[in-house]
Image 1: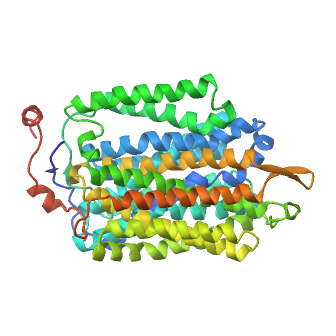
Image 2: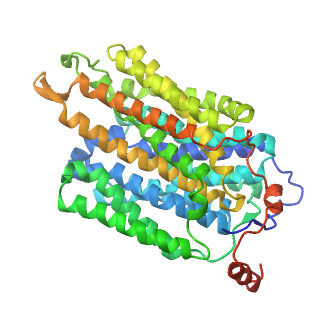
Image 3: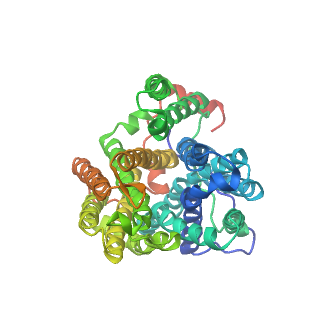
Length: 506
């Protein structure tokens, strides 16, 4: 484990005063919402992609799958790179990648180019954990919890906003328009971050040592194999050679990667830190919360669009179905500071437990209110509210369990666990809705029981997250580590690492 070594931040130009902390928080949160929107922006477009591009439905589904894969791979890797070489620098590079991906999608209708562009857009999700790390390093201690809560919640806010916005574009404009708009907003993000060189300052904390390229490659291979098997297993067959082979490869590579990381002088992921109960249980809770949250996004729009001939569907339009999630996005914005106050007073463990309970209650509402649009919206908003509190508490729990110099990698890993939970949720929902069906109005549709079973499974995931949270070590309310605290922390590195860094002039 490397110690925190302060590096002088780039001074602001002469005569330019550093902005109010709220400006930095606002800019980073806006960046987080933009990259989160990219995860769901093509969902309303998927049914039309085969007609628009000549691609098969299976190929079209990769427009969503590839963002999950690249986001999972690059989030922890770029978090580590940010810890070592500068978080703001890597954040700007991630936004630039988003812009390039958006432009590729905007100028082409070829499925291969579109998948490549979507891959680049997915990689930009690393902006969220990088932003959390910058806020921890730069803000006064009393502002850290509320700022981090908002930044973390942007993952859910973006998902809620992306669907209705994309639906409006698809119904009223050429579909390439949404990619031109996303590219333009990405450029605006970069300008805001770089404005006067002090709007979002470079963090003075760095982890020293060499970048663990072997560890990054091993983690990437294991994640790609796992997520490919999970996301494509339903199409390939869960007992097929490809699915089983990928799962087996993921397990073998993960074991070899873990053995290597334990011996590496500057590991990609410090497994000894990650194995601490405070960190390990938080990451397990993140996976379960990611699963529980994503079910709400996956089934709400589809359920209200089901035709009335099913006996439960409302026959809503694409835009109306997307708007069902919008109140949840508003609730997430409103509740992130509430979560921060709960964490400050009672500790983030209490916040996370409360959140898991609220999500479970939300799915209870969904189970019994499937025939009323307004009650469906109410249930979806309750789930989103619980998610807002959970996403706000998770980084606070992570930050109190790791050194400040490893915040980027640790938050990247926590974000990765949420993504893995979402992948498992997607596979579970697809399996349930595809296998519990009936004939209605001349077409095959999921039964009401199928949707209700999804709600039960998601509520079970939330209750499992609650159980895991109860086993988290209890501590006094945390305000997140500060730079000054980090400088006072003891140097627990091995003698060989300290000697190597001294030789490098650190």
